Image (cartoon, rainbow, N blue to C red; front, side):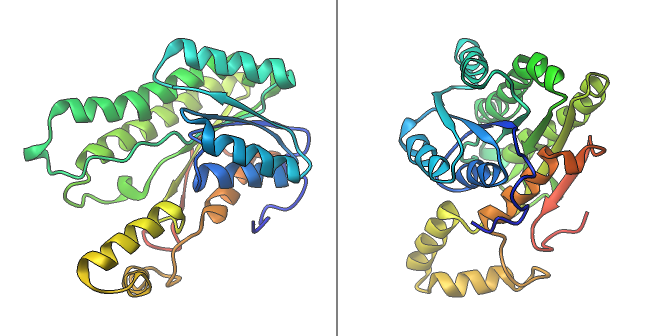
Length: 265
């Protein structure tokens, strides 16, 4: 871990992280713990969550795992109950749940694919925000949405994913206005490439397919980015920790792009 936000930025806080997997979700949980928070880990699969919970414990913080399907009302409500039962309060909700997008152009995309993307990214996320609002209002807490650089471009075959993420951004901005009077801040982090396990696997697959190496694909990809490298999961997580922390107490309704300069906004 980079520990870029420094110890104590979330001291005494409780952070709920949805979509905990081996890459960004793990980093958000661990960087939150490194900053002093206890964490509630939510995902459909328990395998990765249990491992991450152990890592949180090694940092001296507490973690609880809750198997959660955010597209289901009862499952989502159970997450709220488990968080409050475990810690008594919630200070930040990080909406990180993710599904691999369809990579087809609209001419070959069934509308059901778009609906499924909206069900998770938009409606599932809204469901969690609604359910956690009373707890966040009580703590003067915050919500951080994980979006994507797809909202900054219109490359072919990303259309279904862009619809879901553009809708998520619009919803986030409206929630900031609606929940602000209750003291709840709502912000967004939009990563581009994330040099984590998922992208490493994809580059390895592409390297085998095209008879090259992962390193060459990395260098070709990074060549058009200002810093000539791809951000790592901990660097995205540092931005999340900042927006969830009191250091961002006057920031709401904003989208922070974390992409090493791939896109300017």
